Image (cartoon, rainbow over all chains, first blue to last red; front, side, top):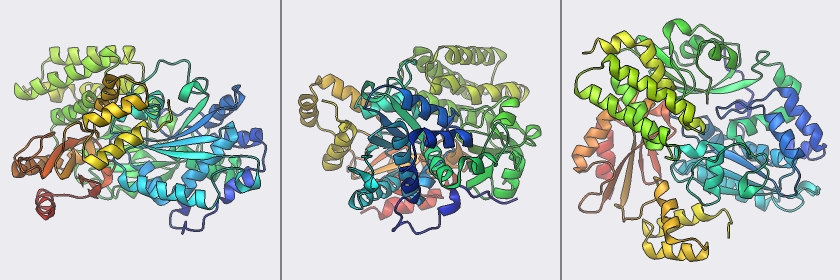
Length: 405
Length: 136
């Protein structure tokens, strides 16, 4: 079983003369038909939340008003995730084509791409691509002899993981602190500058462009009933050949992805994080499941951003817990205090446990309790999922952690 | 005025001066009709912005999970010992500022280190020290 090349199909192609063939076709279609094609493909948001893309576009198109925005979320920050950087660096014009197509479909004349500030190379490549597109009049007034005008602006992030949340990202573009907003209203009704806005992930928009090239049905024929198409999987951690691999949903199990693409683990496998540090771990006995949204959800975790992090024996569990805990303590925006104070408290409990040489069942109870509170009280995805990894490790390795004393 | 260019302006100011000085904060406050406090609040939210001068070389070392699994701790302690500073501090000669940061998005190539805008992958402790010594 090799990679199913859908998104990665054009990676090796020379992009210097790419003139948006898919956009040329799309711009002659009715907006409703473009959206119908995306709906038929079954594409879901690939940033982690998994909202159906076609439905999002349809809702945005139906919103009243002339001023709408399309925003490409390239604030990739989930530890273990590097697929969007891969696309931005290797297929920038196809990412851009996806943005313009989405803008056309929802009736937005202005788009933004928000790239995390640390992605210096991707930022340079994409800014060059924007300049190139402007020179070639592929962006600007009445593009490709149509009556559709489109402007695209790159915004460089400032190093805040929480800006990957769509409402935080909108606040950041507006020049504010990147804290989340209370939803509803969702950005579709009340987004950037209070106008209807669609925020889509880089992989989602790239897939959307390719779907319109090959047809929604072609895409829907890939994958399973509930997980259509392909997904870029970022394989890292204790594997022999880490990297970005394209997988058809349901065609491979998690273990096959690790063994065939990753060429196996570097040590004896302990557990796998299937979707980045915001998802619960899966143990060795849970890996023989097809790689789909539904199968991973069935075993109590999530596909998340597609970051598969493999952890082998030989690491100190408490250190790993502390590492992930520190990440959320550093990256919480601080608006919802259970997330701000809870993640800080958990970090210090873990640190104390390291200092005193182990864990007590009271520590464990307290951490689980804080985790539940954060989950219930946080208003954005960061807080709600911040304790998934830690909670699942405590649950699955209770004896091992308690035995340290 | 809201033109979606605040982040860009902050980045540009920092590129020019190496940090965001107070008089530039005042100018931004005037331009955007915001209080200085609010502009400062925006700046302080983002870890990449500095309101104090940093060293000539900004050294970032990723210590998130995938890099950690590939022994980034060795690189972190090695660099800390060599420079004699902790995360967030600048060496006395103003040459290096060290930041231990979260994920830099090169998780398949860890440990990862950045010197200003340049990424170095598969960095060992020895390789990191060599890179630092080559900063002129």
